[in-house]
Length: 278
Image (cartoon, rainbow, N blue to C red; front, side):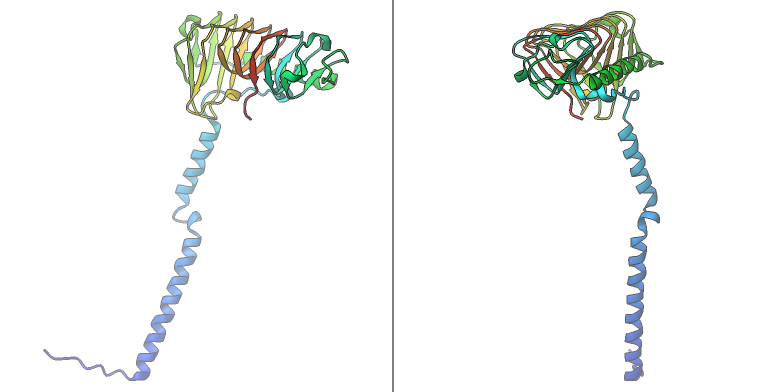
């Protein structure tokens, strides 16, 4: 087979090598520039979709949360007094207004947080701050009206008022009756999902019954708007923010991960009340 002879001079070969190297460097620079622009170029649609997905996850499922404003700094807030069977353990601020501080019967060692009263008659560690309490009570009442005024419920009269044993998705629930939790009830949803329960009557949780959260659901996003009284049974466990027109009675040994915001009294009996994580 004939062999083709390379007739290029050494000078031509050096010139070709330099030209090839220059083209390679130029190509690398063009590639790097394109890669740097990728988020606004070829990869932009994926980035936009990721941002939209993140926004949707942040919004969550269910109604918009109820704004508690300054009442949201309290674990227990009452207009007409807080009674207690020693010893309870409350994590968060406690206050009562407009009634005198003498109606707040918690001991200082039962509260990890601040105790607010409207006068000098409260516990020795209490803060006399009627201004803060007036604002918080006003915000509590506003929050109650907000929750009660939500329209277009996702579920109406579910279980004829008995929700024990059910698993509840995020949404707006409405009952024209009392609501009973005689057995464990599960709220299943993500950390940004919201539940609002509108109860025209009373809310009664049986002894040892539990409200359980799954899927990352958070107590701060669960709102129980109750026109009547709220009763949490002996050794029961409750989750969420109570907004009641009347009173909350927490029976012996029961625990609450949430807030008790009552427009009359709150009664405690050796309970654990923990304000929700922000």
